[in-house]
Length: 320
Image (cartoon, rainbow, N blue to C red; front, side, top):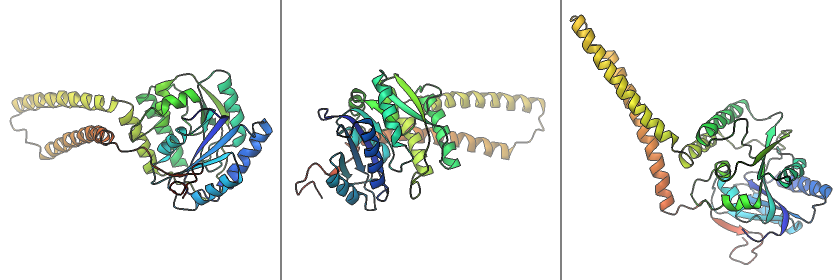
């Protein structure tokens, strides 16, 4: 991170939001003016290799407004990796992470900062009336339960993508150099000084969300394999449980055969048992392989992100 030059940095990962970005910048600037922070904040827009005109729009906004700073990633890195790119260049005393679709109300920014000024390290937001699709709400609840189990997350804390952290927490978070970043997991590794404020979840200003079930599954895998060995322990417990069940079944079959010599051999039950045990073994091997694969990619230097251009480096090699 560079030396602190402003009070607040707002980091926004951008993907397919070219039409929304001017409104986002306008709303944020208006709110900062109301708080008297008009000259003491920055809006850091990280274009995650969006296929639309988002980078061109970001460049235009940066030319119009001094508070806008833009980054363009060479390839799509994912939401959390794009946030990590922004955190590496955020200059504020406090750093807010928010989405690019205006579902996170800019008027909550000041409340989040004030919560940090009261001494907390992190301020999460809790939606009063979520406007996400039903399947996404269910997926978020599932991820919330998984995070409680794997990350020792405090019960009742919703890991919202709209959150604020102190600069020193951001500095600890960006020390992680693995290719599969999960920002909330990194935050929980650093501190438990966390508060929550309630906000109204706004309707998406334009377009449709690009967050799919595959993204939710990817998020769960990051939690499961990057910050916890619980899945490996579960695989061990399953192994012991299957061994015990197999022993009991062998004893039961021997006893039944002795008491009832005419008892026929069960082909269906045999196949079912083989398929069940084979499925568990395949699951456990896949789980171990996921850990090994992530370790392999990290050892081979797979980058979190690759910056192709920024709006504050205007030479021919960087400002594209």
